[in-house]
Image 1 (cartoon, rainbow, N blue to C red):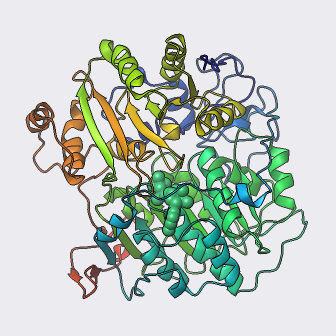
Image 2: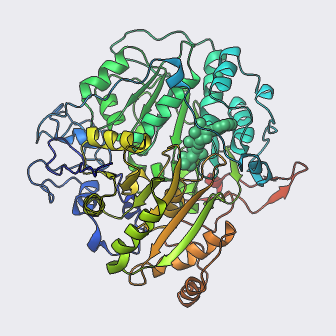
Image 3: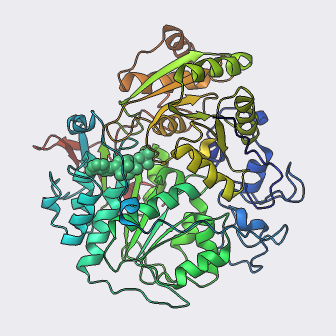
Length: 575
Ligand SMILES: Nc1ncnc2c1ncn2[C@@H]1O[C@H](COP(=O)(O)OP(=O)(O)OP(=O)(O)O)[C@@H](O)[C@H]1O
């Protein structure tokens, strides 16, 4: 297959994305900013126009493509400022991209890949539930007592057995409790919240939503990247197949009018990126009065310094039911302690915390290798590895958008069929790149952290960290793009002694916890950079294995602990 060069940088649509290099916004990164894309840092904090890309360059971060769309000029008080505001920027041409419609045929809707040889090993992972009066876990789908349509959809999706996060989360959500759940990458968190929400909706006899200028969905699901919300939407559509529940997806980089047209046709479950969501709320196309379920997927990311202010605006929007009146659900594979504390503001005081394995731990089905590779040897090493890998699907992570373009172009020149995804590409290009990668047309995808979280792509056998991320949580998410659902995968990381030493300690911890070999040289660096009292990493606390409310937990007879810890709001002055 010939090389493809899809790297059009002279974008006419918006493309900036705080989705890239997200951790820099959290204030925890130790890495210097010299290899960071200047767009990112500025845009988050106030949207300076005129970044390195001339007139067409975006102002917004994250899901901000519409910021140059001129599709709206009013700026509502709860609008997405952190993301540059999707409709606030009148500079630049209108975003016209309309994503292709989702598949209609049943085979495509229910297409799925096989669980892997390690799927049954999930059962051996220790699960901790903390908080008062947790309902018991269920062992089978039958025990969940779902309606026939849902059971049919589960069967058609090829699910026969629950994963641990599903065993615990489904009864908790069915019981109406708020939940913070942390489980390893690729272990089925999406169905863990979608199925019980749909079960509630079916039980409540939801009526088919009809055309209305103002829609009032029962459920909002937010996630940090466009591709991820789209994936969640497709899952929601799959599990709600044959019901009158209508799921809708809206995200930046697409025509605002298209989002509005999707919504006004009826909307029970709204899957959205924060910027587009706040825009649509500002345009009074979505009312919040009927919200019963608010889901934050990749919740630690949604609450950090990047998206946290947006989420706060969301819960204080006019009409949004108070936390006592809605069910709030948070899911991630990582949950730093400081973010857990912030989350309490969104959750009822008696929320339950489910930890499957170690919070922030890497998936054990991923074989991790760390190689010492200096900046100037990286390209040669990458080519050597990719030539050995052959046609197996591989994601190559780099730290900046510019570098993603540069490395992808370089690989194309080396006749390695490659595409790329990052926040400076038009949304149309991003989706094309993902499609080409998914179908194997381009077996190598060079990506920034915009693709680090949540993406569930069949057959990704390798992840290569060409650049290590600045935080260990990001590392855990990146390598989690392989080794999903019981399948095995491999991750190779280039460790640069000039820039990555701060990661040595948390990396050793992650490798050890996942029962991986730790190179002696890495242990040495970790030891020499040892910080007494260091509790994890400079940003994510990988050593946190527990609910932050904990400290008074006790093992119950089912083998997990049930904390009687007080509500954090009783303890913390900040709340
Ligand atoms: N019980 C199950 N049986 C079979 N397959 C399942 C089951 N639960 C989930 N899956 C499949 O496993 C894959 C991973 O699930 P999902 O994307 O929800 O993982 P996740 O935990 O959200 O991962 P991440 O942390 O990366 O976001 C999906 O393809 C999903 O359809």
